Length: 372
Image 1 (cartoon, rainbow, N blue to C red):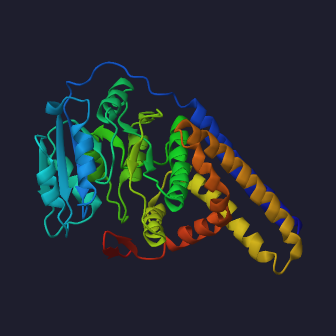
Image 2: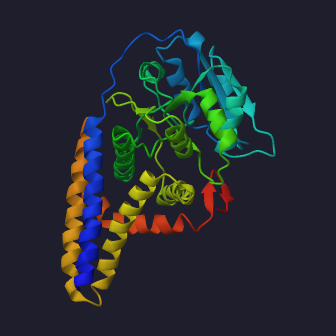
Image 3: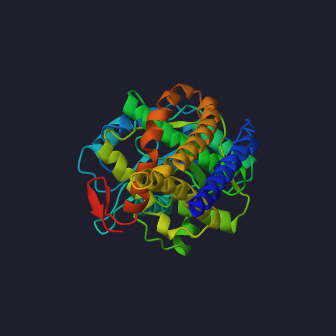
């Protein structure tokens, strides 16, 4: 029993150190302040699409409503063999915008191939990357471009949240805020480990250099690998756009199955990570959740394990709640914390399943199955 307490104290201490470090990183992160007018700089939006006919119109409307000069905005949609009316919807909804559609050849497929094709065809130095189901605020291009140039960064990423209308979608939003907060906080510690390719701006040359240098086999997108590549080659030149209004909204998963498949796809990348900071964070999170599951199952055979289980569970709940309290509050979404306890009841089981299955099971995306 003494050895269990030693393991318990070590893992609990490791997790406490990690989350408290993230809290410090969040508060160290400077808030975005608009700077000079960079609106004479041309930019290109690179948007991979596959079967997005239901989402294209809000995106096109959001692009049209940008306060950035329309003659400085180019849009490239790269179609990944859509089987619906995505292309027709783009053509009918683009209006007078500078929109190009590029179709991937039959031999190429997937988001990585689409982004690579868009970068090759792009004619501007600065590119913004987003998903086809994104809902934009009107200053998105202006703020992202300002942050990239004013901060002398090579990569800027921003927050994402779901368009949540019901309890299931709000639970997803709360879980996503934990990832957004972690990515932002790690950036505040000058050790970025997470970003979301749905809200990103960078230099075209850097992304092409990354593609030429790195040959990743991961099924999911390259956003985190690109971030880690920039971190390695341009230390200190990655920033997070911290502003309560700088958030992009996107569609949540409609059901549990699609949500699990998405998280499995994200997790499938983890075996290729080499950065010590992302490995440390992933191991710390997995260990505390694995220990919780181990203790819960062990109570069946050793009744005295209930005490370390309750203590560890309480420690984790308190520190997680404090972290999410500040993150959701900053983005005016604190009301979703009412789902915190229901989420915590199953979260440690969910983490164990995703961590293991994500490295073993085939990955599904947009009607495709790929083996890892």
